[in-house]
Image 1 (cartoon, each protein chain N blue to C red):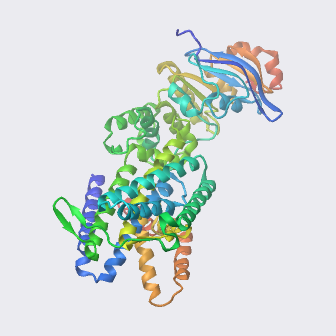
Image 2 (image 1 turned 120 degrees about the horizontal axis):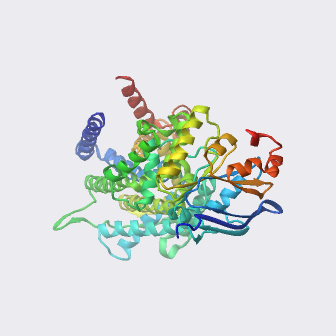
Image 3 (image 1 turned 30 degrees about the horizontal axis):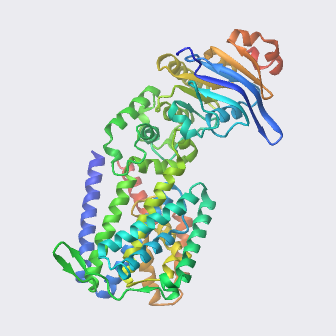
Length: 254
Length: 323
């Protein structure tokens, strides 16, 4: 069963009124293959992610995750199955401490949601797991600081920690290096590689920065004007004339 | 080391405060004992409200609906059911929780101002029910209690007609309600409440049903508001529609903002300030609301953390600076 794709999309489409933002997208994301979704601004990448991750029900098509139909399910039903996402704009719990940020998904994962009479402070196992995650990401030294006090790049790492704490099978990363300086970008790429290689998490990311895409992705899908334009390994994509055209001979050369 | 000495200090402070509260009725005049009893009840009410505002980030503008439901349930339990004091309290809690479950189910899908407006709407509806369903509620006259059942504890029995015993009884129940709230905010569930306040979208995308968690919070807050309402009914020897009026819903809001929504005891502190101001003002003028407004406005503008919140913040900032 392990060669079954982790994510399978069939004829996915979404419209706002008459405006079709994405249309007829079919694709398979193989398990364990670092995959990227690229496309010019307004190609529909974020809409695609929203439709897959449960932000809204797509108007057409099917989404299968790990062999199960998850089309139109709300996020809180999709997440426990192992599909998580990050957001283009940093999305954390600003006035909680860094370790509390990571405890939140752990509480949910351990089924402690309605543990009204337990003391969080006595849940040593949860704290240990949270510290492990923070250590893995490299922000353990900031554990007791409010997340809002951290530098921009570190905040993005907090979001990664929140996502990874749930031990996802598949993570959708929506422009993980957006707004980062070169040093932070390098750290994020390193982290993404490690996750893909060592933790058995499949990564499916969108990215503006073509350097990032071609340095990490093993498989690339190109979205253009709401439809799938091309799919293949980085070399195929790089030399595809349609892709070059879509980017007007711009960043794809890099 | 610092945290342990901090919590030891906190424990010591709590013990002294508790001792003072217990001793109060034995050296204060009756009038002040009565005022203090009312402060305790309103403090519990405001703290239950703050589980929603300060922790979950929900502004409930109809909390008096649950408070009043608790008061009427306690009154009816005694008048029609002939139930004991403890069962009357339980009836108040249970009824308020049930009302909160129904209202909450219809409200928790909404955010911010919409949530506030819908809770306000339900609060006004409940007021009208209390006001107009004369056969059950006695209409605008309310339900007077000819006698409050005695406080019994196994074989021991005492009449709450004595304001000092009433005070001690209210103090004990308020502490119990406060303990419940304290355990809830310190639990894993409490962490999720703050996560809703901070970023409900991120919480949904790590797998939480935000609506269900909000509903649970609304029911817990409603149950404790109902407990406060039942106490208020026993204290006043009656339940009246005024308890459900939207003006009454504004009280915990004002107290919480005065004391500080970000601090567990902020609303209780705010309740004390509220009554102290009121008592000081009515000696001089009838226009106490003008004075309240004159205090509230600068607090909101200059001390958005509230009075207790600002004090504690300054203290902890001072501690951080000294190495």
